[in-house]
Length: 232
Image (cartoon, one colour):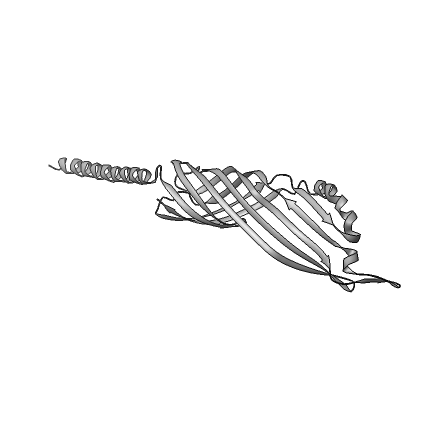
């Protein structure tokens, strides 16, 4: 009888451990089953403005995302004082981009992710208008705004841009709702520069090609993104 009791206790302990392990395995399988092949929709707030996203889980380590963002600044005015006159610069900028990316989660128990993909900037243009609102005097000669003229500058980054980033948070959350943060960069196409000028500023238009050459390497666009998603 004395030898029987230790064996009984040992068998009961082994059986109890087996039940715990089985429950944990079943729980993980249910969690994976609830997460696998699911979709999610999300709203984004980023350095590209606001946007919407649709994502699909394709494996425990990969999510596929399709996203669109838009950003616009209109009539941004900057005054620069030059002698007794003001140089008024009015700028408009807008971006409209769509990107397809693959999200890789190397650790099943962590939401750390590496993201790679490509975007298409269907609209990536900035325009600026520079005008004088004063006059310059050289002896008896007075040069007014109509003589000085104005200058129009356009900068266009439209085209295909590769993307690479890292972050925390799944595109398709394991729970019903999810929050994610991402930091990365787009490598924009070479910018196209246009300059139109009138009056005494007219010769400046010949500097378009030179300016385009000077800024051809300024193509990295930093991307910070905060998103709220819901699994469907």
